[in-house]
Length: 236
Image 1 (cartoon, rainbow, N blue to C red):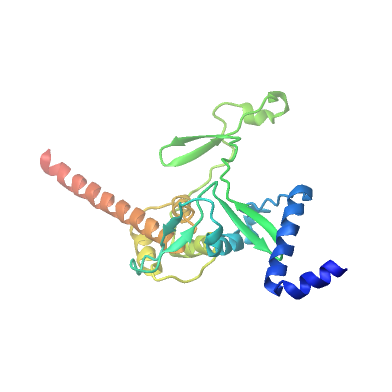
Image 2: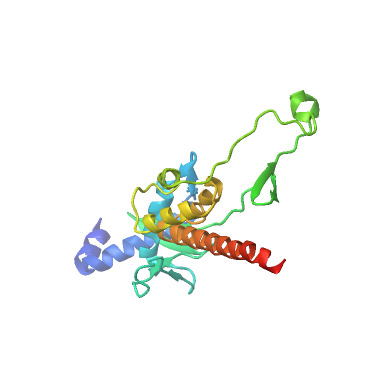
């Protein structure tokens, strides 16, 4: 008690707090137990909002970065000179502290397992699933050349395009809607092709730009094919 009284009177408060904190850290390093929280990008077939929140929060804690590397980029297509955003490289550790608790953040990249093989046939995609229990399959599936149902795959329309955008990008309006809808009416593009372009990037600006370029390429090819067909009789 006497030592503590003398210590409190002689040593300034800030130094006392610093010494106490160092003592706590010293002993906690021997007796602490680590616990790991895993925050995955997807949760129950949807984007994990906790993961998105961590993506926004971690670039604000760059002081605890364990490496000299840092991701820098911008997705603002309207303003290329916009201030870039920061990101955390894969397998990079960030040291953080919250209410005296030491936290270590690390971004890991995991390659998902592929349980099916994909083959392309023309412009369509066929997904092939394999099984070791052929005897359990419906006999109709084993008949070669059998076709019970014909499915008509119409071309994409402006109405279908808006439905796909609302489904995959969760938006109802965009500055590129008009030029895309105009091209959709001029060229032949299936809903599957449009969906593939929309799913190429989660950023709506980038996805729409890619779709616009895809449709413009189709339009150019269509015009070139028309010129070839018109010139064919003259060559004969």
